[in-house]
Amino acid sequence: MGFVTVGEIARRAGVPVHRVTYLIESRRIVPLGRAGQARVFSEEVADEIIVQLRQIATSRGEHTETHVR
Image (cartoon, rainbow, N blue to C red; front, side):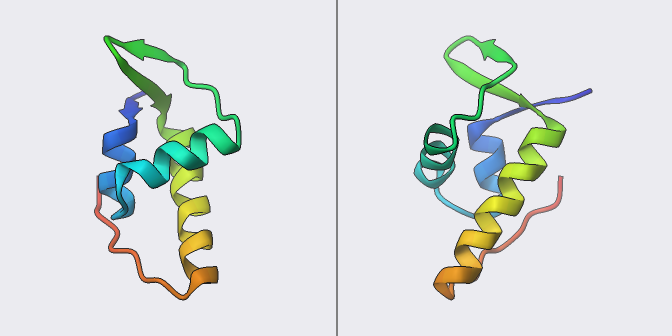
């Protein structure tokens, strides 16, 4: 099982880090833990966050550039 940081989620989703941070805080998504100061999430949770970010972008009429792992 891999661990993913907020920055990596943002890169994969093609959105700014602040959008990922806002979604995590507003939905009260709990990280698995920390690596130094970075919050880390499982791949499954990261994928779900990306899906939610895409849904938000679609509802706003925005396009996100998705990056492959």
